[in-house]
Image (cartoon, rainbow, N blue to C red):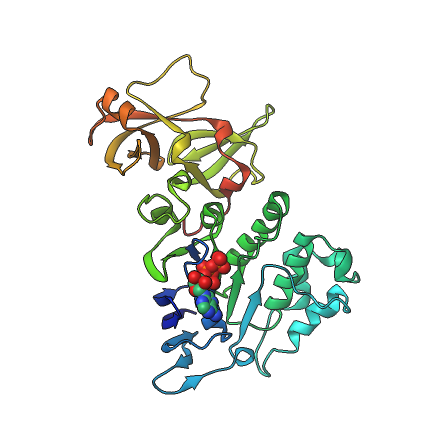
Length: 365
Ligand SMILES: Nc1ncnc2c1ncn2[C@@H]1O[C@H](COP(=O)(O)OP(=O)(O)OP(=O)(O)O)[C@@H](O)[C@H]1O
């Protein structure tokens, strides 16, 4: 099932022009505040009628301005997850979930309540009222309600934005499960590189109402020219497998034959995962360093050196583990004589990799 969007919409002083396709999996609409993300997602939901354009959900045309087609929101077969759960306060969790089921069109086979409850780990909450639930619990119920409405597309507008870091990391694995266990595509709005790294199958970057780039999470996160959140968020996305967990709190990963030690990850041995390695946490050395505290040293060949206006340069290193990026100063690059084609070593501090940089499985990475 695919979502196809081609819309134009103008406000006073700002216009949005977006043309993209969202295949199965999670498509993240990635952009700064005010770049037009909500305008696009609201047009898909039918909450906004764009000036012109076409939108297709699973081969059904829900908008065609030329043909005068505009399917209202409740007939679009969309599950919408808002920033804050928006549960009905007078209903129990179970009743909130059952409310979603009222919208399943007759003849449509939909997710089963028990399966959704299990998927989201909310069985123990079913008889509770929303008032006592944590932000993360509310959001899981809201996801469940959206799933139970028999959607052909899930829309999530910054669903983690209202949560603190702990709650965010509690919810992210559920979105990962939705991505791998359901066939419903998800259009997910975010301005967080970590969420893109964890979830995105495809990324659509919006800048000033226009699509600046569309590609895989690995491609977008490694391109300093399109990163909406600035150069500090640029990094490589590596596909890894858990090899072992050690008693000293480290996990050992295999990344294309290279070994990477990280603070203990939650995945079990044999599982695949994605690891985001921020470019600014990578140091370069011309020879394999010795007597150094960093545990991860990965050799590679410099494939690209990009410089912008600032003091830093972005060095891409082709390694057995995949492309690793290092952000170093222009001065260091000059002193080391870095040039494309040169062999050097990426030094990655274990503790620089945060838990939110690690997710799994690695599908679509
Ligand atoms: N109803 C409106 N009338 C006029 N301008 C609007 C309207 N809605 C949005 N805009 C403007 O359009 C631009 C894009 O807004 P939009 O909400 O789509 O961006 P966004 O990327 O979702 O931002 P945020 O992450 O802050 O929600 C902004 O400059 C906003 O001020």
